[in-house]
Length: 393
Image (cartoon, rainbow, N blue to C red):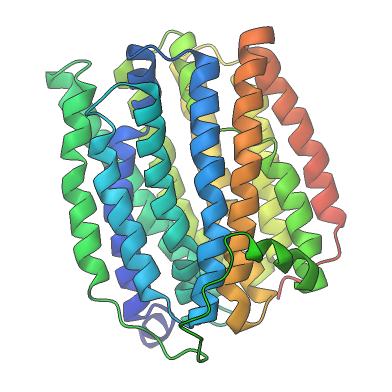
């Protein structure tokens, strides 16, 4: 118990609870969002473009606000405002079905994520050492994803009694979001290097970090971005389940199953990364991703889908928190929010391109080509990452 208290501080546990409540709100809506968008008239290509634009445009803010947090030497205000924007934007999405309004609210939700991500991850990294960073990020991802499992369960219970009543569900999502915001007021600003409160950076100043970043950071981020360019929104997997004939209940149930596996595996995956190396753990996760996408093209019944979504949960556990811990180990403390925020911003632009292209491929050639092409591409990137000379510490 002594070691556990040293690793998992009050700040780590508070941030875990904040993320749990926020993801509970988000994931009440995520598995039904593509269904809601279809209900109000979006095509599959339109869904991919909307999600890509929201992720890409708001994703650039991750680099700006991460850089700004480092310049100020402050973390908590960015965390608080970021979670606040996400909490209020979700119910607003259901008030009006005009495409530009839906895009604006989805972007506002993602902007909230952009404001908080770099500062929050820097807070987590500061609470750990190189020997424990995988477990700290793993615990955070596990608590975050536990909320992502509970949210769809609540959505399933609501839709069982109120079929296709997606709009009211959006309003209910406000409650856990507000709890998350309230919890951020319990966070304490850590002692950091003094910043310059008057020095607000230019919105794109963080892009210069690529030139001045440690060489190891650039060597790692390059293949990670290539992977992101192949990793389109999970909306397409959910739409594939619908194409395969699964009901809303089965669709949400499988998404819950994926998140439960992810939540349970996140901490062990972080522990494996601490013990055996970030590269081995992350590359193994990419191989699982390729197996899932390849297998999806041939899956025919719920048992196959359940097995594949379990593997998908293991992939997420082996990559999401591990990537952040790995990046944190490669940069100085005073640059962490910039390094993490810049990576997240570049990844968001990659998601914009990946999601938009995936929608076009789906409509033009069919979902099977999308699934198999993605699997093949990820195998090539995994081979690239395995050969990159980047330390795990």
